[in-house]
Length: 419
Image 1: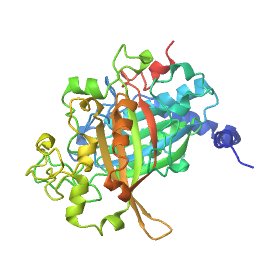
Image 2 (image 1 turned 135 degrees about the horizontal axis):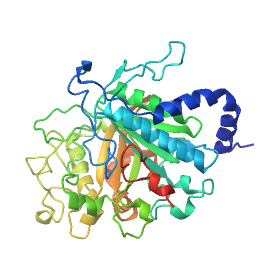
Image 3 (image 1 turned 45 degrees about the vertical axis):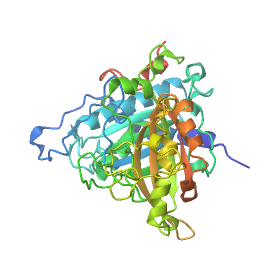
């Protein structure tokens, strides 16, 4: 007899009940308390003290530069009712805001459970931390009365050709994208975010990612993925606000619920890269599949990574094959430029599988205004590319990232619950 996951989690939460009530109350008080800014004399390095504001017109972690370390955390909502769900969302924003600006552990009685795990010491430096909160389509079922306010383009991510999606690594009611420069900051943040919300949310799946080191040759050089190629070269310019309004942010007056303005759709794909198979392929064939040289990252026939591939001068694919990844992903035609996405990628390593093969790949994250117009259209063009033999998407989902919170009295997602 199968057991419904949510029913099981709800029963588990009820069983914990009174035993966890006192601890939960103390944790919620911590999450809602006024943050304490880390003092300048804390001894933290300049890099550790870098801050990315949690509040703003848009959530951090979308257009801000990607940090070196990241964890994606999908959650199932187990809150008993709508009010309890709101409390959980408020606690997530409150604690994330504290950690993003830097805090110090409060003084308390020695026989009380510590208010923080202490894994970063008593002074918690911000380390460029960003926490991005997003909602999955399943949150808008009949549990919390939110169905009528569901973002118009938010669906459960379908299985595309060549996908082998594992349900245990896919979808979710909420998604947290936690990113910082150091792994211990990310792990500490996950632990501290979950402290006050154990009665509202249960972990569904996680995926840890890392950026390769910045190895140049210029400050503008893209970093490498686990196939050895530079990744993310053709991204939209995040300093171009007008372009992001066209490609990323939901606009006021769009055919969407009003509360979605300023938000964006997030696509997550856990893409396994069959690295042992790839390593047996000749370099020239690898470069032909990608459409770029491996060392410099330049389009084939070019000399610089940021040089635009001149497809019009190569109509038959003599230089860059017609089925090369970069040519299919972004044809650079007038009719396809509105399909561009803001792409974020981190590498991942999950050990090895039962066959002794390395489980490595790409934690692919993309932000776009309309997943159907943008991500799905690009994905369909890539369905039969030669590189499809070397990668398998195994998890992920579609999510909606609400606008940013407007200060300490606000919280991410508040517009969804406004009258």
